[in-house]
Image (tube, rainbow, N blue to C red):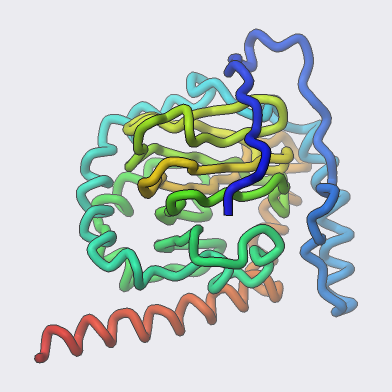
Length: 281
């Protein structure tokens, strides 16, 4: 599961010290595109490609691979309350083996992961809410309400030896937050590379990056790594902000999101039915 050649760490640098921002690539060599044969879907993806280019030129916060947290002051509140999130995560992990592989929910993720080494526990995603999961993690949900433009909240679980190969996210109209919740030692054996920068998670520390840049993640330790995984709307100027809003609200009608929601509901039905059966023994 791990790569035969490890990524070479790069020193983290604040975007305020960079001479220039690297260019985003609209695709990743060697990784199949998330494409569907439907004419409607093809037309939608063509619009996405146009809006992505507009988003780059209309960003209010620049386009670095990894952001300085000072650009988003609300990260301080998330970091302050991280232990409350960790407490709820610990309860979730009592059934860690039953949590779904990410590719079991979002079938397009199979382009980068086809085993259960990358698991998730979803609270919400692009118009879909898992009320049962939110009920298990009410403090996590409350804390995340302080994130402007929230679109996705989940726990992202990387099992020992798991490597997610280089890839890019489907759309640059959102940014991604990770907060380290369980970060095993040695820390130099796990991390995430975004473009030419490598970040190593730290418990209680937030990092914001643009997953539309090529990125990869790995956990070569013998223990599980877990982060709070959040997507939120990228701050943009008009008219990109309007088009971005429209695309994100239309996304819930695409096969990517609809299939994921159906898969999540099916998994929840099994997961909570089994819990109920155990309680009634």
